[in-house]
Each structure stands twice: as structure tokens, then as C-alpha cells.
Length: 189
Image (cartoon, rainbow, N blue to C red; front, side, top):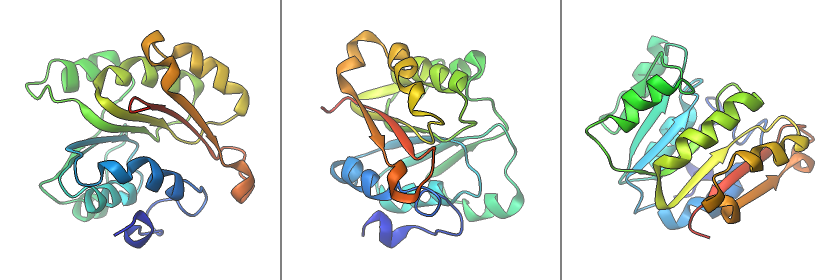
């Protein structure tokens, strides 16, 4: 099944306010059955977390949010292949080290998505911290870049060995949203 077939548009804005789904379908198609670890920062109502669980049939889905998930969301995401970390600040170096660097689980991630507070500071921190956790063919994505002018600043934060793997998907014309921009580091290209 495709992402379009699986999405619950009442629980995520990735296909309603934003137009990310067709881009994600292209980026993720080759990993659908092979991905084993996916991480998304920002849970909201849990819709995208469940979407990833349903799409990546062999993956564990990790999710972080600074806010505690409500009981309805926790129940919605109650699955042995979903690991919720709440309330944790994903951009705090100590939290990052405790959850990922010093963890007994050293397997890297196939896909890491930042759908957090959408500030330039957290996006820069996300690139610097989480790009280290990507598999050799991994994909790192920042959603909802607030201004096209931020792209150069984000590019500057990318480690030198990954600069040739950067792509920007400017989808603003699709739905007329100023922040319909994806910043992607795709190590498989």
C-alpha cells in the first residue's frame, strides 16, 4: 500500500496543510520493506507515527516530543513497534546522548524526520546532532522550513562529508503555504 492509502488525514497535516506525501513516497519507496529504524521528532496527534508504522512493515518507529502525549494519542500509538520518548527535548545534547549515543542499541536510523518547533536554531541543532545517527544510505528530513532564506544557513550546518547529499523540495506553490519546504540529506545519492 502507498502512503496515500495508509494516511489518516485527521491526525497529521503532512497531506492536508502540507504536500509532503508524494515526495515521501518517492524518497521512501526503496526502504519500505528494508527499513528497520525510523525516528520522528514531534508527535502531535500521532498520525505520522502510525503512518510510518503501517508503511515500514519491518521497522521500529521512535518518536520524541517535548510534550507529554495525551492518553488518546498513547492509546492510538500502543504498539510494540512504536517507542515514544515524552517529554524529552530532542535538541538537548544530554538528552540526545542519553537516548542515542550512550544507548545499548547502537543501530543507526534509516530515516530521521524533524517536525519539531520549526525554529532555525532547532533545525541547525537537528542537523548537527542527528546526521550522526544515519545509516550509510539514510535520509534526514527537516519539515516546515519557515523561509526559503533559511536554506543557506541550514546548508552551512551540514557536515562537509554530507554537503553533496542535500536536496531542497520547495513545495510552496502546491498549496500556497510559505513553509511547505523540505530540507533533505539523502546519503543514498
